[in-house]
Length: 329
Ligand code: SAH
Image 1 (cartoon, rainbow, N blue to C red):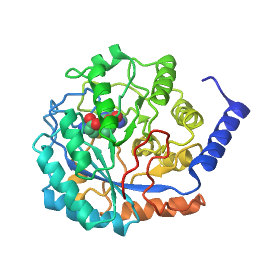
Image 2: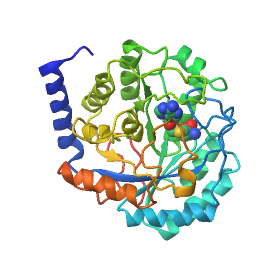
Image 3: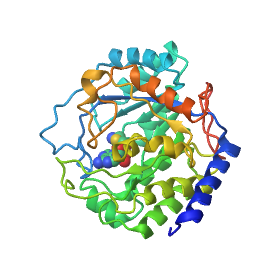
């Protein structure tokens, strides 16, 4: 990954061409509702990990979550992403009721991003109607994974990802770019690892140090271009995958998401979390859009897409990769 100058320009140009050819010019809006910041895990990079006593914890009511999906439709989203810490108050039954309720009221695809769950529960949530499941492997290096996840092992996370696929979800995963103790070799390995997983969605973003975590003093990579190269290479290796321009990129440097859409990305994720909770779901600092009102996020992103001459995906934007299980909606 030593590309510079004209090499780098041609890498980005090629990634953009592959994106256009395989997934088209439309950008899918996938609205995220961060419905609980309560978490049983202590992932050392994450601002809402259970050891952080400075966080005021919240949990949205199931009816509030369902109601918030109206905002997704208002803003042109065709998918709602339900994301939370690993909060087991939202057990399988509660999650299934929420999923069924959303599906009966709104024409939306549902992505779950709620951490590791047992195989039977995954199957149950799939049967209730959830379409996709997002679980990042975070890093493919087992030692680095263990160092960052005091209460988790890579093997188990990967087994969960396999169960997600077997349950019939369109699987999404990815990794954190520039983790402490990582290096370009590990990042290259992460890229290959993600590719071998044959994912429908590959979500990666920069690691950004949160001041109230054990990794508070860890800097961004000196080579900022490496973050962008990673996404471009992922597109070249995974032509039909959905690749979001993740929000953490904008926390690293404003307008990075716009740039990502020109070098491989085809999805953006407006924040649909009700305003009063947004500031409390701080996985990392400088998260954009925490001071806007609920509806602004989508509007701002739409303006940005128009400036890039990109349309908005009108269909559900289901997985296009071979082996993906398309759902009925
Ligand atoms: N509890 C769910 C959702 C986690 S939050 C789960 O375990 O899957 C979603 C993602 O945010 C994580 O997978 C992680 O990659 C990312 N994240 C957490 N802390 C971060 C940080 N400090 N900088 C950048 N991304 C972070």
